[in-house]
Image (cartoon, rainbow, N blue to C red; front, side, top):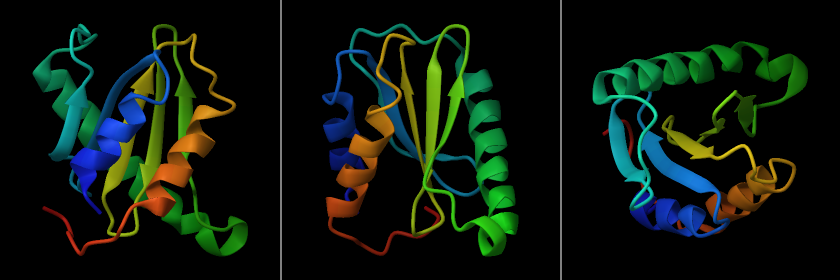
Length: 126
């Protein structure tokens, strides 16, 4: 999957999008970033901590796949931002953020369509 193209497509889905990034299963940034002109809410060190925490959380959710089926996406509606995480087939995670004004009832399903339509490449845990 061409992660940079996926991130670019996501960034233009809605004017309320803030960032689209791919992190590996250890929380290291693989592709993507913030929308041009958008001010980050956190510093670089906080980004790293958030990436590691989300990667761990995504791995832990696999514990319940047998009972409930695999997670397609998770969403955190926070005071300042909405954060979406999408486990990818190669153990990486797509991490997206938007302003709270975004339509969180529709955006994750549009992102799933982008992921599903993207050509697959074997890029495992860069």
